[in-house]
Length: 100
Image 1: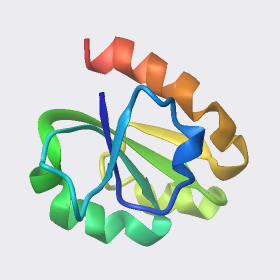
Image 2: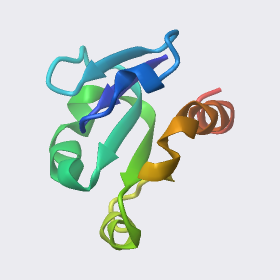
Image 3: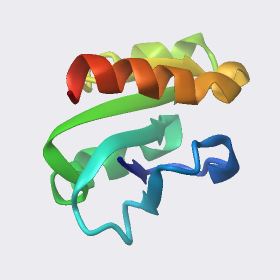
Image 4: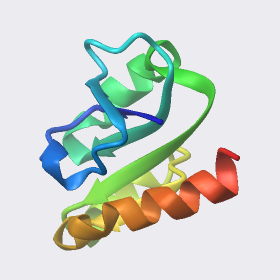
């Protein structure tokens, strides 16, 4: 599974079986896109070149106001920054539900 990051994230948090690439360096076949409030426009401009036709987006929220900003962008899932250590659990659920 390939994860494309549009934001800064400690990749050590992600399962080592995942391939992790920045959207600026990806080959264009990402299964999951990780974004935050600072990268929403990079995501919008580059998602089709960075991800497969069928991909899942995860927004990392710093506060409740971030949710309001993201809700019009068709984000599939959200995780609070303070819960980022549980991101692999979220990815597992999303993989079963949307990518199988």
